[in-house]
Image 1 (cartoon, rainbow, N blue to C red):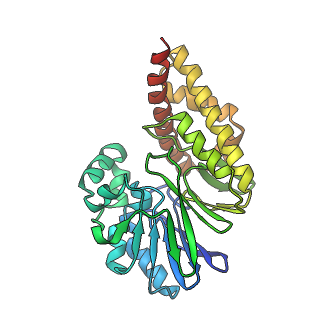
Image 2 (cartoon, rainbow, N blue to C red):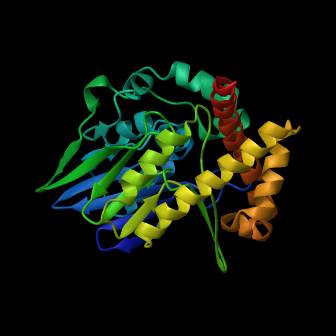
Image 3 (spheres, rainbow, N blue to C red):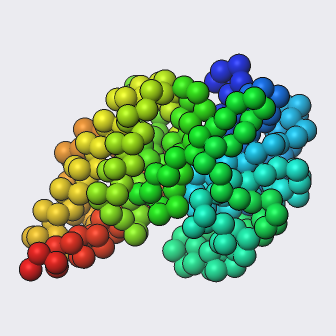
Length: 305
């Protein structure tokens, strides 16, 4: 786990996992403003001891706010554990997500069914004390305000946060893998997925005047307008590819769609440059995203009959 300074008051923390291919995949963010310290998405439970140690070694002995973009294990699974190290921290979460963090057993059980050994590697969640978690659309940070923006799509409870010209976008803009020459990226559309809702969230963030976009996966981008144009275009490409194979009745469906996307989606051109273990990871998550799109098509296409 490493901590890298992006700006004077902004730090990226690599939340590396003890899984093949899961390096430089999960981003946590430390943002300091007007004497307040904010942590965005603390990551999974299994890496909280390393995260707390990293923060302490950086001289961060207090966290005022923990901002969650969504409650999936890789971003919020460690929130309850983190508060054992920083009990003064106040957690901000979409109202739909709060009950699942206060009493996380159901979320943990469902995550194990979907993710299997990946969930086990992320670690079991600990409850977040009810008094420590709430939903605020404007979070006071010293003399400044951080704005919470509802951006459903990747999840119904997904939230992005704007702090001046910085935008913590979670997974709205997709998943990025930096390469030696450029990058590879893809949308994150697990079930339940709705094309129009996800597109509206991309449009909402595209309309903001932000210079730096901080991603949940992975790192940051300084092409604020372009990144959301790319996300919108790529989302449409994925839905169109899935629709073609859905109407053809292609099976195995996910494999057929992914093969088309690797061949035809310019933003996945870096697929063959990915190391083998990262490519294996991406194949698994691509299949889950394609599954989300297929379930959406099963509902929308049937209605047209």
